Amino acid sequence: MDSEVLFHILQDLGLPEDYGEKRGLPFYEEAKILVKIGLNPYGKTIYLEPDTAKAWKKMKKAALDENIELLPLSGFRSIHTQAAIIRMKLEAGRTLDDIMTANAPPGYSQHHTGRALDICTPGFIVPEKAFDQTPAFQWLTIRAQEFGFIMSYPERNSEGFIYEPWHWYFVL
Image (cartoon, rainbow, N blue to C red; front, side, top):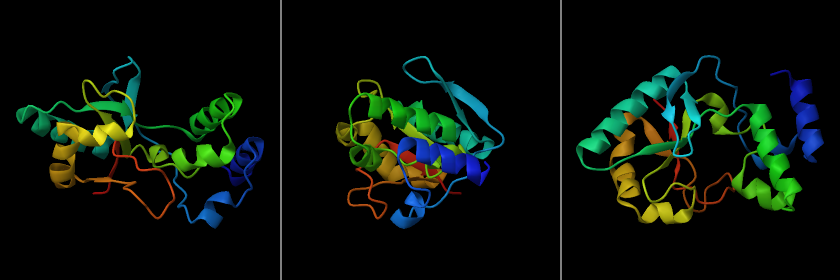
């Protein structure tokens, strides 16, 4: 994405151009090639970049073989979609400072890469801390790394985001 376009998107949200850099967040390019991995529990099609999709498929099957059902909640998210999510939260009356603890600014979300996946399980289909009490989360903490996934935002993470036990990033 053109840096001037990103500057205008950040400016429109009330964020300075250097917000990500000052906060120490890495910039993430948008994925160029995406594949469908299925639907989330709300019926929305989820996309990942091809290598991540393959790893997800293997991990999901391995979990299912152990009676753990992993469901995709959110995958690829464009810079424009990230901005729309933040705009919607602002319009709902949330403060920008509050939003920036749970959402990365446009250009700085791992979801842009197509390698980030928010994961849920039946009975826990919203991204909330309680997910860490599920057998699915316990399985992920033990096995996800075998498939190349790490939990990006553990408690007290250096990026300053809230604890996100549902957010996993493909690193291999």
